[in-house]
Length: 234
Ligand SMILES: *Cc1c(COP(=O)(O)O)cnc(C)c1O
Image (cartoon, rainbow, N blue to C red; front, side, top):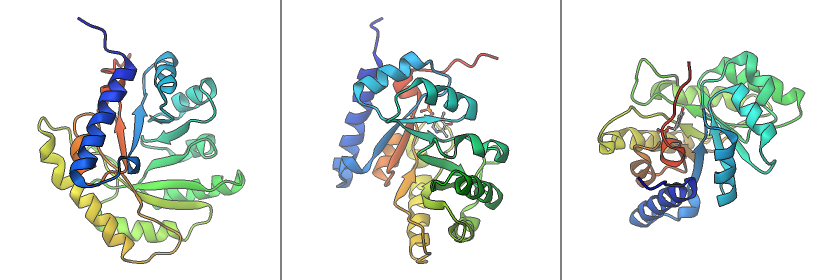
């Protein structure tokens, strides 16, 4: 079998993103491809970096820190996994965007640590649109209130919403999930809450990012489609 390289994978994903944007009348520049590099060795991240990738997503604090040290400093690191409050202090001044804020308690901790480090932390509110029991995230009903509460905290800024759609064989099944997140963002924007924007919609993974882009995603988080399947070592 022919070896498919990381750069070819990224190119293929970019081609799909561009095609979906054209169909939807969107500018492809509106969409950031986040290379989800969790569990993958630094050599593979370096290959993606050499191609031009500057946005990387990780879901574990220690792994993010290790890769932060090993990789060039112009990378935008995205924390996409569930974040424990006691670990906020390690990453608050190192990440570009935290996608997974789903409680006021977590937001308060981020605010507190951001003040200490004299930074402003940009975050997304994670919404469990599909209401899956196994997933983190606030509900659609509670999202607006959560955004309002976080908006009052210093040194933290809500920049949009994130969702993890269910794993499905047919990506079209997730279309209503993505359109619901988009609609929720528009609703929240209509509230004219101070100090927030809803400009970022982080939605879509390897299996369904094309559908997410056609529904308005501005960040897609692609792991397997770039780096290949993950092997979890116990
Ligand atoms: C792992 C992960 C991804 C990437 O998943 P793939 O299916 O490999 O593209 C995206 N988002 C989150 C939150 C993840 O944890």
